[in-house]
Each structure stands twice: as structure tokens, then as C-alpha cells.
Length: 382
Image: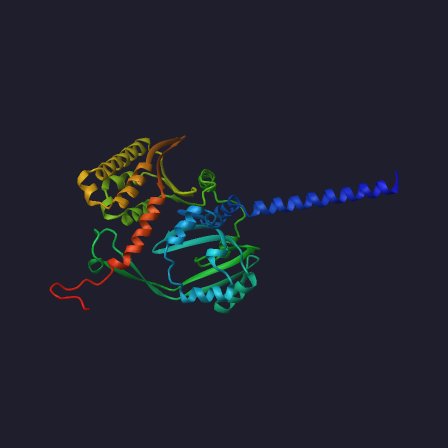
């Protein structure tokens, strides 16, 4: 064989090896940062008593034309001074730099405990310096775990069981919140683990998925592709909490009884080009309860549609508002889905541009409605 031929063959072989290694590295990296892999790790690390999981793909949401339009009309809250300082020192802004987050939560007595995995563009050096300055650092389970203590504060909540009333008559409860700890650790470049639990290292020691991982994974697979979804495994405490948070007009013993027989609840948001599709499902091993729940929801839907069609209400209601609600109710669908030993009740809604227009109109009219009324009998100042 000629020397030039050997050189060409050797160069070709080296190119193929390099190309293969590059392809394997890219394939491994893409899989390592996939939503499926993140959720699998979350289930592997989360506590057995987890009752709910929330997944948000910020990168996918930022690409949605519908959400971009909605965001342009949404009034941004005033930046908190502590958060502004955090952004200044770490260079991390969640609206811009957070790609996706998966969070598992549970209730331990009066405390809500959560554990989360987050992917994004993190300046690890700056964030570690900020955390070390603000708190403590420990080496555990092979990771540097940074912990800061959040100060005690008060949380004000309105009583949702009361009917709508003027602000002055609303019942507001102030609940003191004790100091809490936030711990984080960088698992690799672009991924960190965070919790408010006492010991983050307990979440990082798990090597095998939890014994009940399969039911969670089944629902993750079903919801794959949705940038936002929630999965709740119901027990007595979650049913009670959901019932207490229901608006006064929707609190019904019969509805609560049927809802208590749902063992799983899921909620998914899927932005379309000019709408937002919302799909929620409740699963129950009791086929009769599932059928009764779907019949009840269909009945409420028919009543709502009939109410909007009432001639007297049509005359009194703002045409733009009525159009938005008619579109929402016309898009609503309630159906039953059979899944082997579980029966599901599915509710589908579609948020259209009419609702965005309604929200924008309401925001523009707010300043006029907030003007201080003049006392009767007095002339306004000139």
C-alpha cells in the first residue's frame, strides 16, 4: 500500500472516531438536559410522602406568541429590593436565565416542604460567592451545600369562603411566618438542586427511584410536550385544602364528595399560536363517581351557557365581556376517559385573544374607576 494511501486512511479513521465521539457527547448532553431526565431525577430524589409536582419550561414559554402578547399587557410587579440586590450580585434573572424547573412538594403539619431541580444559565462562581456571604457552606454527599436563612415575615390572606365584598369589608387574616432555610447545591454545569427542608443532602443520596415512581412517570409521559403542568396525588389533606380554597359559589357538599374520590389530579397548559389550551383531569378507581362528576360538571356548564344567553343579562352585560365569556364556555368540553383500572374526568378550556382584550380593557379602565368619588351635595373643585 502506498504511503499516501495509508495517510489518507489514517486521517479518515481519526475523523470518523472524532465525529463519533462528538456525536455521543452531544447526544448524552441533550439527553442529560431533557425534561424527561429532569423529572426522572426529581422522582428519584423526592420524599416518599410527596403529594404534588409542578413542572415549568420557561424556555419553551418564552417562545410562545400568545404568552409574549399576554406578558406585554401584564403589569410587572415592582421589583423587591432584596431580589434586585440578588440579581446585581449574581447576574441571574429568572425571567431571562431560568430554562426549566421541576418542583416536588408535600405538607408536614403546618409546614409546606418542597424540593426542586432547576436548569438555566447560572454564573456558578457569583452565585456561590453570594450564598457564602449570606449564609453557610458545608461539604456533604460530595456537594458543596449553601444555606441561607430567610427572615420571619407576615403573610396576608383573604377568606375565600366569604362572598365577594368591598375591600373595607373583606376579612383578611395575617399569619406570622417563622424564619426558614433555603439550601442549594450545584449538581453540574447549568443545574442546581434547591429545598427549604432541613437537610438537602438527604435528597442527593438516592440512587434508585422511589417505590412508587411508576405512577408519577406514567403521568409525566402523558403530559410530555406541555410547558406547564401540575400532578397531584390526592389524600385526605389535599382534598380538604382544595375544598377550603374553592370560591364560595363553588363550595358544594356533593361536589366535594365526588372530588374526594379522585386519587390523581393533573393540570396542563399548552400555548397555541393565538390561544392557551387548559386541560385538567381527575382520575378515580370508582367508575360511578367519575360518571356522576362529569354529569354534574356538564350540568353546570349548560346552566352557565343558558345564563349568558338570557336576554335580560345580555342587555346589562358589557358586549366585550359577554363575547369573551361566551367564547370560553363554547370551548369548554367535559368528557370521560377509560384507563384500565382508573376512570378519568377531563375538562378542556381555551383562553382566546378575546380574554386578552378583556384584560387589557380592564387595565386601561382601572385608573378611572379608582378615582375618589365626590361626597353628595358638594361641587368638585375647579
